[in-house]
Amino acid sequence: MSEIGGELARVKGAFAQPTLTLLHQRQAPVVITIFRAAFGRNNRPIPTARLHTQVEEHLAEIRRTGEQDVPTGTGREICQRWMRGQWLVRSLDEGGNEVYVLTSHAQQALELVKNLARDRATLSEHRITTILGTVRRFNSEANPDRSARVTILNEEIARLQAERDRLVDGADLVGATEDYMLEGFTELLSLISALPSDFARVEERFATIRTEILAAFRAEDRPAGEVIDDYLARADALMTATHEGRAFEGAFALLRDDALVTQLREDLTALLEHPMSDRILSDAERAELHGTVRLVRDGLDRVLAQRSRVTATLKEYIVSHDAARDRELEQTLRQVESELMTWVATTGPRASHDVPLLPARVTVDHLRERFYDPADDVLPERIVTPDADDAPPVSLADLVAQGGPKLASLRERLDAALTSLDPAASLGALFDDFEPSLRRPVEIFGLLHLAADRGWRPDDTVEPYAAVRPDGSRRTFAVPRTPLPDPDLENA
Image: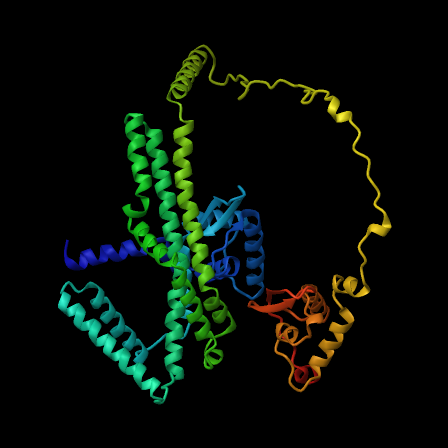
């Protein structure tokens, strides 16, 4: 085959992948829109009946916008077509309920569309610097020449030392430009958006291995002991036998380091608090960066659950497999087939005979489960009524401290905060300014109750509430952040 012919074959193979078949169809914009609206960025599992209803509702709303080229059929039929296209997969969650999740092919298509929807990064100083730094770091870790590695490390140490000394001596702190920050955030969001499809690809690989193991067990073309030894060894080496498994093991080893995870969280927080981040990032992009650690942990949990399912399948099959019982079943089925052939030879082509699939069940009206126990008729001990004089004294202040929220005082503080010249930014900031008697944990519920009555809605972030109990002990609670409305906007 010529060079161009081989290239054509490789391109055709790429176009045959479910990712490109999804993007290449006429209804791709509608399908991608429904996937993004239903599953979100975390590919959360959706119960089958709920997704069927959501698909029908989304399609009805899309038709009202004037779009003509939309999928036809019920939500169930459309989801089944998407399963045949390898864009959806149906599985069981931890509770045994059927759920839909996006395959790695569908997530990769969503990632491509999302990247194309963003402002594309062009050639810039940031990109060239990133390439140079990556190549330099890669060479320092992979160069087989010991002296070359030492030279690279010495140069890096000298550069960092010179920069540190310059800053310690009070030199000007060179700030990043807005274009540099935009390039950095764009590349960071692109890397993070690829994580869900990467985790899904590893999860699907484990599901495939589980199917292969079960098929090999059922084939029984080798002695049972040999099959068990072979596949138990494969189960022990699942994470090192495939490219996906080795990649996941490397990521898992890094993320098990609490110091690295803490560093990642702190670096993301510092970037989000940068003065330019508000002008560059939208609310959705800020939420995406803020939830990076949770996204990674959820992906790890799903992959580990799939790996545990593979191990559980092996154990269950080995424990429950009975070769003698399987042979008896095979003999019984052969006898049934022989009798069936005899009956067909002595009857007409349209003859029928009712055969119950299962034997009739024995009907029992009531089966005694418990017998009489004389201990059940023993009277309980008499309740001794304590003397009222023996009760410890309780003051009114103690009762008030242990009671519910002081709604009247909280309402006055809210009204005063809204009319203040320097109002607090959120309920949490307002709560921190209260005196200790108004910072009990129960006052948090009172503030949230008053905020809900006024129609204030929390956002996607959380903020700390430093509460003080009546005994003087302190406890910090993480509560959804509720911003206070701007009084100038309300009066306008």
